[in-house]
Image: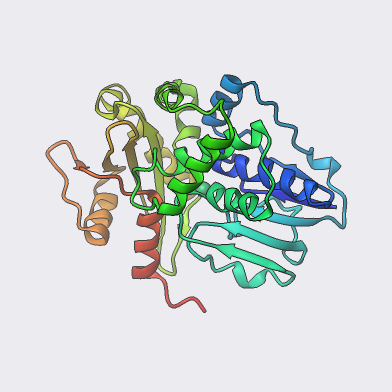
Length: 313
Ligand SMILES: [Mn+2]
């Protein structure tokens, strides 16, 4: 039995890949299920409710001892469930930078890590290659997975391949609609205070030889309005996460998903100084910096890895 899985609390790209790739493997005669670890991001619920999609993940205790794993939308290890043993991972499909854990996967039979906007693009291409048409549910999840990860195809990471995958999914599934994109983005921006920390994705530090840093992330529509209301709370959350996780620096990348710009600000002066010297951003009198294009968190992580990591093999 093969189990398709991804990182804890996956976003819609991760969920789309688990759902759709497991479906594809099953239709190609393999026996697979998918395992969603922990509650997915809010956007997953929004899309599933909107289109009446039901997810049926394996439960932790249903995973058999000698299962093999396919890991999607991830090539690291620190965000994988303990049950996923390195030597049981047989395939990886991802679009993130290469992680230092990659070498520990000793049983890999198939590995595809491409710099595209979403891992769902790669899974969509697997369907095209196979000559099979994804189910309505798989097509919808893949489409909005690509739209979400590529910020409506506006992110600097967007490739022609992402656009072509979206075109193809639209052509095979009539329920996919452009109008729904704005609706999803606006719904996604209504973040309750009790969910703010969770939506900020600020729990996993990037560990470098000399320091630890967290890049929090928020993707909302009408960002400036949103920050008028939430900036103080965001600062407080960052300051307590900094203590709790014992990291040296913490800052947030806020992306306006409708208007295509970002605002970056940091928890304290130390963290601001780190952002200045790492990315060259300058802060205004409110200690914020606005950049008139979308810089994905992945790009920031890549810059840090290049600058501060000794060469990874
Ligand atoms: Mn992704």
